[in-house]
Length: 489
Ligand code: SIN
View 1 (cartoon, protein in one colour):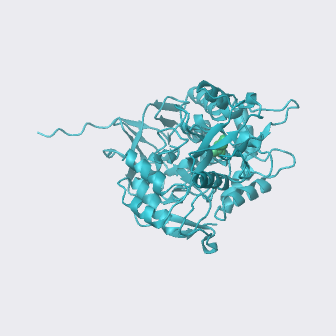
View 2 (view 1 turned 120 degrees about the vertical axis):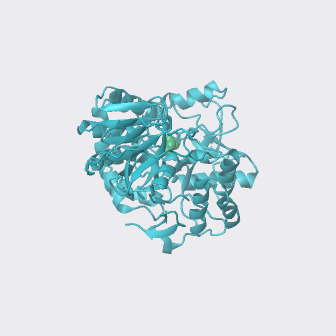
View 3 (view 1 turned 90 degrees about the vertical axis):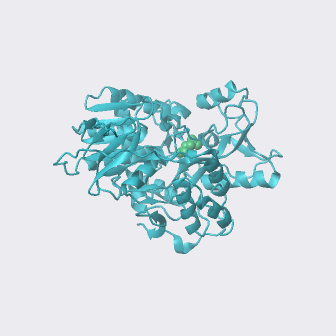
């Protein structure tokens, strides 16, 4: 006789947060400090998330000669005509406050001898604007400190080594989330902060878990996705060093004077141009010279400023203080994601999305370096507070759905994304990718097919120019349909 499904164990909270990277931790802390009971779901032990890997810092206009308006202009220039202005204005205005709030939570940012912030320079920034904690160890320091504060916060229940498996919706409203282990969290708002999808591409700087789980959960709940054709390729990921494939060498090192050299040891690009330009120049140089990498020359950069990069390379037998580092582009950050407003609210009531999982339109077609970590805090806070304005669940729903397995990419899918939706694409390759079994690979292909132009990180060899008619337009996928362009302001 078939056995009935055992009743699910239900955890009640006001806010459920899925993902314990920078955005998730900050959202959980904000909600808890506003008096809410929070359930925080972390697939890994706390402090081992993708944010932990982040070497970049937080972009914030803190220098006296800088301003939020200049920061916004740089964001818009890097984003190539489709940055949503309201999102950029908000981020740039709130960024200095986010830095101060993190300091209040115990994060120690690098300062100069005179007490001012030690501000780094990265591609596309017209000013020194990037605050770090421990140089290139910023992600690790910030996430460690926030995790320590979260653990001490009595209103936050941390469900470690737990994974979200399905959205729980009732009459179109999200009422919680089902976990892989059969438990379910019932909450008036649920915040997805599960990171991006860059590890779907075969060559990546991201940890292996960055597979777009949050995008698939949100889509299952009925939420709209956008801008999936825009994945940013980082120009300087290590290659040809065993055990270090894809290891990121932070752009901040170029900010301190490191140069990129071709096979003839000649410079071929201005190293601090926005990232799309530098990555494409590296790719084109490799193609033209028939090489698998270019060289990063950081021999004149103080190794003490980037201890974890220098340490990792030395451990692998290469001393960047005396030798050139072989680097080539790797998939790094998804500009697209779940469509949200400036409070992180998705198109499904009760569902909020923050960090790289979300798409506010802030990053346009090419994210300005280090805007994303700042965004985690600005948006994480806003989503937590907005979620507390959701109406309470007057009748507690019972019987969460039974989760179906979330599709995992095969190596063939990862290779196909790299081959057909890599630094350059064309219709023939994208049509092949559209037939891939993985749902996100299909959606990337559909958005990239729709965008018949080259803009930012999306370079179509068959449509090499920008189409000005598409300025401000985002490829949006709603209700399981094909993507269509929508103009965002
Ligand atoms: C880097 O440090 O080069 C990466 C930082 C970022 O992606 O913003």
